[in-house]
Each structure stands twice: as C-alpha cells, then as structure tokens.
Image (cartoon, rainbow over all chains, first blue to last red; front, side, top):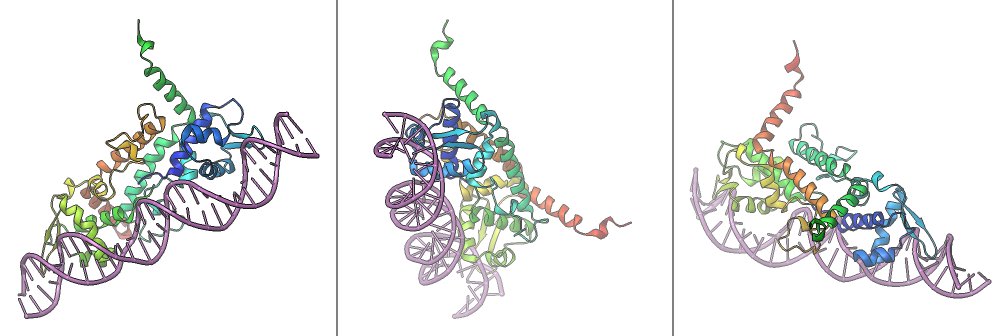
Length: 149
Length: 149
DNA sequence: TTTAATCTTGACAAATTTACTCGGATATAT
DNA sequence: ATATATCCGAGTAAATTTGTCAAGATTAAA
C-alpha cells in the first residue's frame, strides 16, 4: 500500500516548481540538485505531467519547466494519479471491465470503494498552493525569534 | 498504491471463516475451494493471523481454523495491517527512525499523514461482523421476490 | 552560425518485491 | 495405521520498481 518513488518524487518536483513559480523556467538540473533525484529519472516523471497539461516546458539554453496553471489550480490528486494511476487499494475498484464477476455482491469491494473515496477526499482538497501555505507556516514556526517579545 | 494479494486474499479468507463461524474448524482445503486460492499460499496468510491471535487452529484430521474472537471484535484494519504492514502511503509516516531528516518541515509528509489517517478511519470502523451484515443486505437485495406484493 | 544547454524518446538493466510452489515434519480423528 | 490436517522453511519465476544510458531534436545566447 505504498506510493512508489514515481509519485513521491513527482510530488516533490511539482512542489519545487511551485516554490519557484513566477521566476522563469526551472531546469531539471536545479530540481535534481535541490531534491536529490537523478536528472534522468526526473525526466521520466516530468514527461506525463507535461503531456497532461500540468507543466509547460521551455526548450533550449536557460530552458526548463514551469507550472502550466496556478498552484491553487493543481491538486495533489492530479499529480499522484498521473504518476501512480488511480489511488485505489485494488484494481477492481476502477477497472472498466468488472474483472470481479460478483462485484455487486462483493463485500471486500465495498471496503476498497470506501478506502478509495477517503483517499480521494484528502488529495482532492490539497492543492500546491495549500502546500506552499503549509510550508510557510512551518518555516515561521521554526524561527524561534518570531515569537520573542 | 495497491494492496497485495496477501491482504486481499487474507481478508477473503477471514471473511470466509466469519461466514462459517460457529460450525467448527474450517480447513484450508475448504477455503481454498470456495475462494480459489491455493492451499499452500493460504498457509502463508493464515500463519501470521494465528500468531497474532485472530485465529485459532486445530491440527489433525477434521481440523482447521476458527476465529479466535467474535466477528464484531475483529477489524479489517487488524487483518490488513498484519498482512500488509501499516496502510501508509509512504514509509516515513510510520518509520521509527525518521529516515526523512526534515520530517518536521516536510510538507509531503503532512499529506501522507493525512492519507494514512483517513484510510485508518475507514478500516478501523469496519469489522467482520459489519461485512457479514453487508453481505446479508446484498443477498436480500438480489432476491427480487422479496420486494413483491 | 556556432555552441551549449536543455528537452525528448526509447531502450535497457539491476534490484526488489510479489506471488506463489514445494518438501517434509508434526498432530489427531477415525 | 491411515487419512487428513496444520505447520515451517526454502526456493523460485514473474512482475514491478527504480533507475541508467545513448542519441537526437530544439532552442537561446554568444
């Protein structure tokens, strides 16, 4: 029941891009150094995100990647789902073909449906902007002087 | 983000045992035939469930397995967690050692925490008895005559 | 125009995990 | 005894994950 590195690294990369939103294209080299992910592997992650319209790319020297929308308009669900597929605990929940013939009567299936819904409820309601806000709060809390008199 | 067959088959096996609760030991052979899971594989699943005290075993001829508690006292969480480990989307959520050094400041971690909590909220509150109840409702609904005048 | 940086694609491969199978030992009802 | 079970540890083939690598296309800047 773990996310793969694809999802986790992809989310980190998108968050990195959100942090640098508005400062021009960000190269994979820069993301690679900040986040500790190999450039070649990053390329794999970024490709589907671009094709899905979450990212824009700028080729050539000084090129890189940019968010294609505002951070508030990109949800964690979009990102994770693109890289991981549906965040469902079992394939039968999202399979077109009801591979499980007794799907209507399957009690396990009901459980997986509920887990799926609850995961989506969380990730649907967190945007990159929410992550930025959270990051900002964390940074404030970590500076003791801010609470001094 | 999928459960493995260990968790899924294990849950099916436990549900099968719940359906037959009170009718003496159920052999793995019987479960195997009903659920379509190989006996040898079932042995692997059942072993940790027994060691954790969810199941009792009766060895020898006419032996088999029994629920060690009432269906209402066994949650889906216990079952899945025993077979899958913590139902967390990333290891950092449950790792003793904070493998992720910036755990306090990590915004991704916050997301994984929330997903973990929401999954547990679901599986904590479904017991084998709830599954039996659901199964009963499903069976009623599938009998059209029951709603005839 | 040339150079350098970067994106883009696809193939490939090591490492890990999953999903089992198999053999044999032990226990017990009949 | 014998058939029927659980128990236990190894072993293994397939799939997935987690990358690496090479070659080419595209573009910005000198």
